[in-house]
Image (cartoon, rainbow, N blue to C red; front, side, top):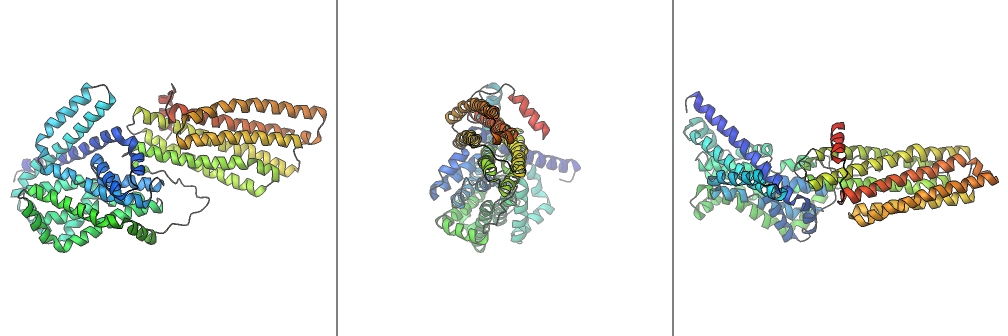
Length: 563
């Protein structure tokens, strides 16, 4: 391969093959997520109570994503959101490491030889069917085909390198410098963000006789360690539980490598004794390593969780922490459906703060409590911070390829966030101002007027409670009931206004002194109820699924554009 043309062919072949490999994995993962992504959260949270079941679920999910890295990053997000506990995630992580070996076994079975027919089948389904379900199935076939076609092109591009003394010398020395080989493979796997792709390339190097089986084992060890780096980085700045999940994956891999390192020679001989196929030997190394560490660690996941809790204890958190608790940007692209679940949890958390502010509003007027008013205003600052972060997060989700149901849900959540923000503004700019006026003036409501304000306040709080329950339980019927309660509050506001005017006519002194505050306060409560009703409508029509607003696409474009 002396000519420049020969080198160019190799470089272009490697670049093109790598591009097809990574793009194929992206298409495959995206198609599978659209088929089963919306069920992923419920599957992971409900089927992982048992360790063996968690192991099986982890393997199955990783087969779908074709990357244990993606699975672990999702687990980090679920742990951060409090959807899964550390003890639940550990068996899933071990199962994910088993699931990632399937691609290597398929390569060993020469599936790459039928890559083009698979691409043809997938492309035919995608371009000649109109139903979304079948198009997604076609996308899965297309992704598989492109993945294996990329590996085939990489193999063909590597073939001339067998006659290059420089590459032969470099790759041969990997068996003599195992630490260097593992570091290089770990970094390469981290950059690819896919252990399956890295393992496939290591298999090709071995099949082309560019590296020995012993060197390939060291490279596989490095690839297994490197696949945990992405999750570790995604957990930085997240909750302690998320950091423990990422660290668990890294420790599983490092400990497994340390256990196998003294026996690499015997390990290689065992693989050679099992099969004469070089491809199968490398695939079996990868499978045997991950199955062994999974079975070795599975019985001790509870003890391992306790160990992680000790070395990474919970951080002391500030009560006025303005940061989102559940939003995880690292999973938006890989799993938009899961990102929507995390956004829902953050919105529910924000709603809880709004409930607290609303519930305590009347106490400020009753006690003239300046300290409680200050706490409410500080809480409103937190609401502002969380709503800004959540709107930005949802705008990012809207930029991803979403199904119609996911798009509709995302828009509904965006509408809810906007209404929560408006409620916070009403409390800050109207109710808080009225409370300060009452405190500084030293006036009091009449007994009748105060009783009326309490009734109005209680009705608004009840409406807010029912809507909150509907949001938490994803209950359209309860949300629909809430929408029918709000008009009664409107009727009440008119009656209370009439009662107050009647007291002014008969000369009730306290009513005259507090007239402006009284009328503005019941109006503020009415405005809050209107926004709560808007939230209930969004739950019925968009979050749970009902009629889609005609201006939805237009609003989405505006939201994304504003970001």
